[in-house]
Amino acid sequence: MDDKKLNKATFAAGCFWGVEDAFRQVKGVLSTSVGYTGGHLENPSYEDVCTGLTGHAEAVEIIYDPSKVSYDDLLDVFWRIHDPTTMNRQGPDIGSQYRSAIYYHNNEQEKAARLSKQKLQNSGRFLNDIVTEITAATTFYKAEDYHQQYFEKTGRKSCKFF
Image (cartoon, rainbow, N blue to C red; front, side, top):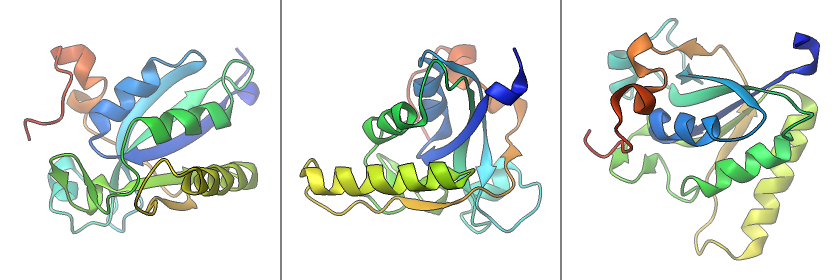
């Protein structure tokens, strides 16, 4: 397949294992990588990011075929799989590395992300305000190999044992 027809999306929604697993189920998503983005330390390790001091979020980088799945469809998945109203927390995972964030790769993604956030905020689905940050994508550092497709490798389907 011609790479020029493929797009990239990056989302943070808590523990990256579950986020990756959810997006891997979407038809048109060709590949996923878990990693770290949005921080100030170059080449952070999992241990670095877990301190909460690097500024990174656990995130998933997605390569998708826009002829099979739209960015708006990916945004819909993103909003469904986590609680975007909790600051720096998803379930039992607490810290800035678990924040809700959309990292856009172009102006069209930024516009779509901001519009979808506003529509969701106005929908009344959530009692509290949506705290998801929407910011330009920066360097994405791929996490260690043992984190990639973690649920598929281990058979676990939860991040709750941390």
